[in-house]
Image (cartoon, rainbow, N blue to C red; front, side, top):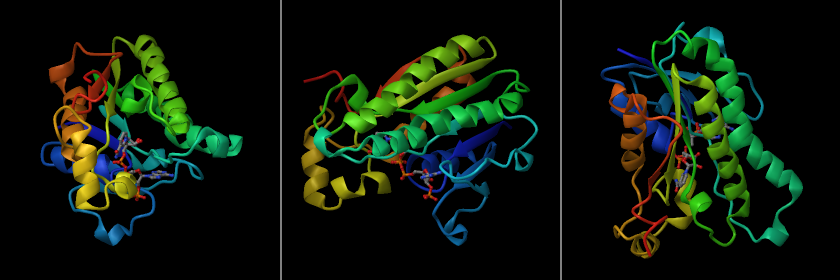
Length: 230
Ligand SMILES: NC(=O)c1ccc[n+]([C@@H]2O[C@H](COP(=O)([O-])OP(=O)(O)OC[C@H]3O[C@@H](n4cnc5c(N)ncnc54)[C@H](OP(=O)(O)O)[C@@H]3O)[C@@H](O)[C@H]2O)c1
């Protein structure tokens, strides 16, 4: 049984991952805005706001075998309508928060014989899309952090990133809130549909597991072919 910490395990990809792993592992998951009463059983939940709080390390197991950082944002706007403060806030949520969490949890990860860190990027780093400058900047920095940390923390801690395209979660709600939008966005992907949280969670579960013990420093594109196929 491994100990996994999932930051943002109360919705979307993080929740799907926690549900997938909980029968065979100990999962500590964090929630931010959800009512704790609606959270599923079998996961040890802690409240955590990366923008205004400190992760309570005393509530974590002594050793952590895997860390996944899920908080993110999709706020699409033309460049002329984005303030520098908004850029800084986005960086704080999507990448400084990931960095700070790794710093905080590193002593616990170092107690594992083979630990794994997984970040979540976006297809919008590999491929340019209009109105995506804010998210592309933040996630591009996260991919840089993946490469740097994978070098620094080898050979005992592996660091990888999964880069999804549009995935059917609350975060993407405004883009996918009618069947017509789901179908139209699906058609823009070579595999003919948008992602489901489980599609991304499966890739993260692989990167956490010993099945990927020779994989580090990678950005794995789980995107229905969107990043590379016309
Ligand atoms: N969905 C997509 O189309 C898509 C595409 C590409 C990349 N991604 C990336 O995938 C990752 C997961 O996205 P998702 O779609 O699963 O999102 P989601 O369904 O909105 O889930 C986000 C999770 O992060 C938590 N969270 C939000 N703000 C937080 C904060 N300030 N402090 C701590 N935790 C916070 C949420 O907690 P509460 O629910 O309790 O508020 C929730 O558990 C993100 O990094 C996103 O950028 C998503």
